[in-house]
Structure formats: C-alpha cells, structure tokens
Amino acid sequence: MGTFVVTDTRENARSLSGVESANRQTVLDYYRAMVEKLTFEHLQPFLNDDYAEHNPAVPAGDLEALRGFCDSVLAVEFSNIFVDVQQTIVDGAFVLLRIAGRLRPDDPTDMVMELFRLRDGKISEHWEVVGPSGTRVIESVVSKH
Image (cartoon, rainbow, N blue to C red; front, side, top):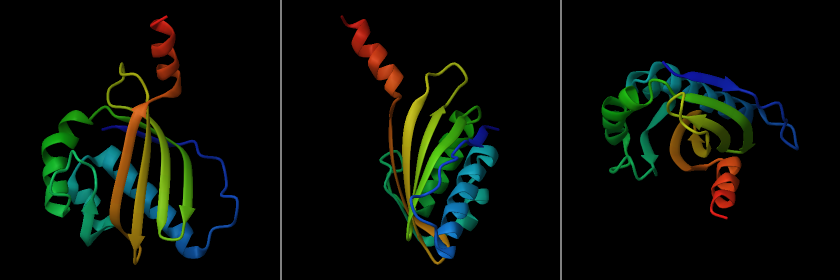
C-alpha cells in the first residue's frame, strides 16, 4: 500500500461552489483509493461509464483498459508509491492536482500534473504529465558543466 498525503494549504483565488468543492473531494478520494487500495474495484465507483483515459500507458483509454492497467501495473509497480498533493485548482468541472511523488522509496521525486473532468459527480476524463522535479532538472544541468 502506498502513502497519500495532502499538503495543499492554499485556497483557490475565489471561493469554490458546492459542485466544485464536491468535485475536488471526489478527485482526492479517487486518488487516495488509487494509492492506498491499488485495485480497479476501489476506483470504479468514482468513474463514469464513458470514462476516457488520455494516458498513453493505458492504450485503449476506456474503463476496460484502465482495469487492465490496474491489474497488471498498478498493484505491482505502485505498491510503494508516495504521493503528496501540493496544490489543487478547481474550475467548474475540471480539477487539477499538482503532485510531488515517487514510485519507490529510493526513487527521485517527480512532479506530476493530473487533470480530471467530472460530470454528474464522477470522473469522465483524465490527463497527466510527469516530469522530473525542478531540483533534479537543475542538478542535471549543473552536473554537465
């Protein structure tokens, strides 16, 4: 089981509507389930039937592809994952998470941007971008000189 923490103490520049607040909580609950439970069965209640996954690691991009990813990759490779949600940004149906995380305890920390679109209180679409932390990028550039 991985570790999930939320260190986001910032508030949006404006107050969230009731729907936006619920959308934010749905995404955080989904992500916590992904990190701590590592099974599709724990994720499915958060997802709309027409869910679209835009991560190239999940080729077909639908619920069945996500199920396959969870069964073959998530439970095996993510069992020691550490996730720190450092910022959440909500705008209507969209929730963006800025995360610092690593797959294994000795891995360097990566920065992750996770974008979710919700409809009727459930996740309909997901995009993500993963890259090295700013510190690792600077260390990499400096070490070349």
